[in-house]
Length: 202
Image 1 (cartoon, rainbow, N blue to C red):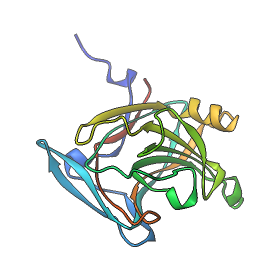
Image 2 (image 1 turned 120 degrees about the vertical axis):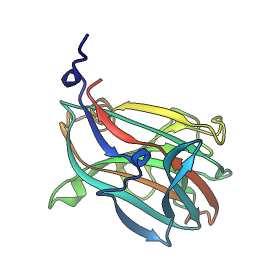
Image 3 (image 1 turned 120 degrees about the horizontal axis):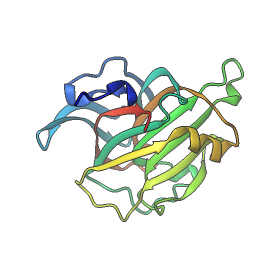
């Protein structure tokens, strides 16, 4: 039986397991979170080590959500940022986050983002506007304080459906994907790992 690979396109963005960081660029906000490829449980992943710092990696890529609406990845954390009000500016730190960006072009105020976060103090499933960007960037806690440390979790999100629900618009394209482990507001320290990141049809 021949498998029909065309029936399920897989658009790779982060091929960390293949020891590759092609196309990923760093953006610093405060200090520098250290990102490096590291073997964990026999598989190469992206390690993020943040000491009172906030810098992320991003990859600009126009993704057609009509073709591949699902964002897939895995992640794990070794430390928790507890005791923070994550809906406030002083508490806007996360052990791990992955976000998708829809650019507004010259109308930068029309830029939209969904921030999928591993929250330290907010219950799984909670949605709120980012403390700095307001309702232009919506936060979704995919994992919360109930999630175990040092354990991989796999995620799959229908980005097109999430954009429709959060912004009330049927947006076909996104322009970039980013990840960040940040501790600048709290001055804390966390260690996190990101597995491969890709988009799929199903």
